[in-house]
Length: 325
Ligand code: ADP
Ligand code: MG
Image 1 (cartoon, rainbow, N blue to C red):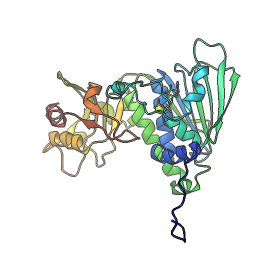
Image 2 (image 1 turned 180 degrees about the vertical axis):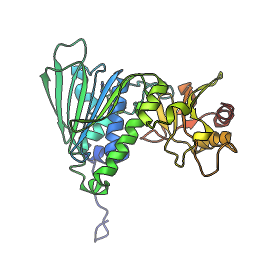
Image 3 (image 1 turned 135 degrees about the vertical axis):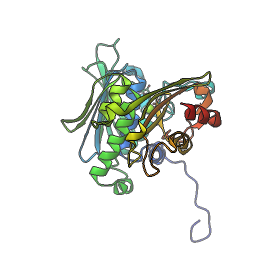
Image 4 (image 1 turned 90 degrees about the vertical axis):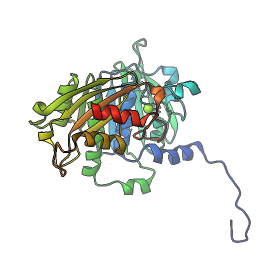
């Protein structure tokens, strides 16, 4: 409404502005970029993923040796609601990949400058695209098979969002947290995290126990992990829990995963804590790394754009299984 009480005219927002608004939901902070790009690399079948962070966490580069992107598809990859991971409404209830919404890349290019180089095994030459303000420039280039995404100057055109970022050390900690979650979930993939050129964390491909030991660290952890494995017709729960005697003062070693995805749930957390009831002092926290495998039709990961909230069909039955495990 303006001063004369006349309604203001309605205008369609530009594609760039729409993506920028939506980006706020998917890309909250630098760690969200790391999460989205690494998940794409995992979905691409990579077994080697390297993350490099610099410029106070505002420059992020993720390289993988996955399947690459077809030259003819590469521009589409950066447009909104474009995905290779689902096609039909039915697929939405049977999700086997980490991504499926087709919004991460479109969001990222609306708030950062992005260069992508990618090559599929069938192509001799790779493709390079440079994206700025939703404009995409494409050329041929030589590169290894796989994909490298280079994100520069994150939030350069959204100063308000940039102001809300914490100091670089806090953002770096969030990145470490995301990195640790995906690493814990994919022990068969070799991961590297670098601060500029300097490697911070190097995790060779290994089994789950070794991965937990190297990703979480601490001399104590190796001898205090007890294996858990339950298989019912509905669900499989595997992983490791800490010995009650090794309970911690913090809850930093509590991880739940479902179908290859980290998630948070106060309900399942309680189920685990109840199993430890009376075994550990009330002011301490058990360690657990639990991996649920369940028919994707029985869960809904489409609750929140960041996908850490997940709905289960049968929470109560799962509680019983957790407790028993
Ligand atoms: P989503 O992951 O939800 O499909 P994204 O915007 O993250 O959406 O990615 C869009 C598409 O780009 C993906 O569906 C995939 O086909 C392609 N893509 C993105 N990153 C990679 C990668 N590292 N390797 C191969 N393909 C990729
Ligand atoms: Mg994705």
